[in-house]
Image 1 (cartoon, rainbow, N blue to C red):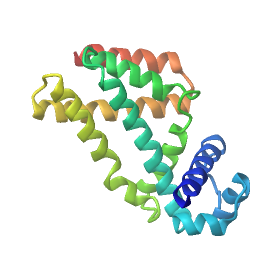
Image 2: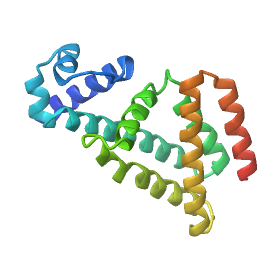
Image 3: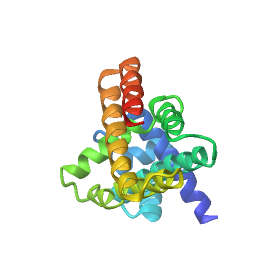
Length: 183
């Protein structure tokens, strides 16, 4: 029961912050917007920073689960998987959390003690999953790790470009060129 309440609060907070951004949101303002009290958020997440880290973990886990689901198709090539995953993350209707991710990532890079812990696991988790995916499809592990890092950096950079410019066609063209050159 308690886990269900925490999960419901987390889902509501994710939806609210994805729509409205983090900005100067306080724990009280988030709580008010999602129909709870700041005390309930403190009880379940410990602090505003605890809530924000829970949000990043949940969203990243959803994304990695989507990648695992796509990768479960043994006939799908790495380029096909790349295109499908790009479509998922680039379509704000399917996944509206990218802006929130970059907002928190930026705070972490600036040394914000509440957001900084995400830097210890967010990139390695993706690298491990992507490396495994590429090695499962026959790529040598050392090449797979470097390719995974290059792909992750490219996609993150193009997502940031897409968020900043709104130029979906340009970002799509760049992803397609990257995939063709990589293969």
